[in-house]
Image 1 (cartoon, one colour):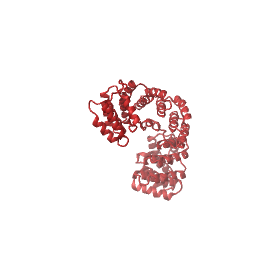
Image 2 (cartoon, helix red, strand yellow):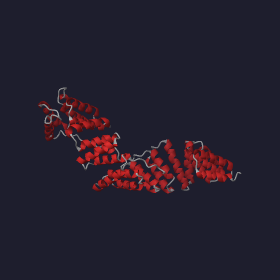
Image 3 (tube, one colour):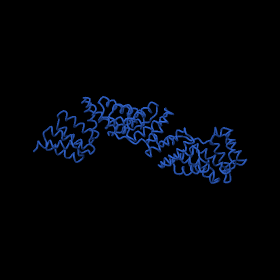
Image 4 (cartoon, helix red, strand yellow):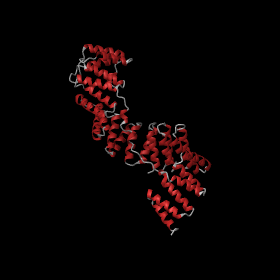
Length: 447
């Protein structure tokens, strides 16, 4: 495998739900009818919700008149009315506004106050769980959501969120159970379907993933996340061609991020179709979400596989994409790759210019030294070739290639003993059958 096919949990893992904004129904204070409904819930079910006094009801009415245009004023009204003796409903409403403004710490504190005042306040437990999810504190979120479930009873939203917490805590069995129950209540929920599929994949139940996801795709063929989840299952089973086909569908749907595009390119490389890898790799670069080091890593892989003309275009793409933003080390790597490509295309002048610049700035640049050695070897300038190969032998990352280059040059000079010595040193780094056979053949010329 030339480039490792990576685990693809990042493609549609826990992010699908964490990025979702969960609206709190109690926040729609600009709707007077809703305010009436909101107030009507308090004191009606005294086991699950606290009572609201007439004075507190008047505060809520004032809050409703300003909340739509000035939530900060609504917050101030509530804070000024809250006392140690006031209803927990007041703290709950305040917490909802704070949560809406992403003031998580203060929201959590207000929810806890509401619960302390009314310990059986199911909706406060639920929203406290939501606040903890926003903070990625899934353990605390799970505790509070489970308590809400105990008080309020089951519904799809609560069960799905509980599944989400289990998933992020890597409790994949309970996550799957919760998602399955959530889908009983909300069978068309995109989030709960994706959570179910994710849990199944983590449990390696790939056959079940495939059987379920075919139905989901048939019901909603324009939903890219389902195609991505199916691709995950294909990759886990090493069905790389099928995964690539799914990624292509995601591209057609206008979805897929840089990681997916790079992964698609990697699959094509591993399927011995490097030319097909060019388009997704270039699209990934265009996204602006691939750093220079990763782009150069792709180029190094392609430099061993692509025809010279196609590689030249990809290197030019990197040069234009990261113009002025490359660190010196990355600049030198790119120059080295461009020099090797110029040699392959017969442009020896361009190659020498680039390599000379690289070595002048980085005397121990192994790639440049190896390429210069190869350049002089092809010109039958064996002493110069040996000089560059010898310098490259001091660079650990390219020592093996440098030793083999030196051996090849020494054979050209009929210095067989010295060549054998270099080859034996290379074998100590990595034993290779063809090198062992080469040593055996050369031994015939020295005995």
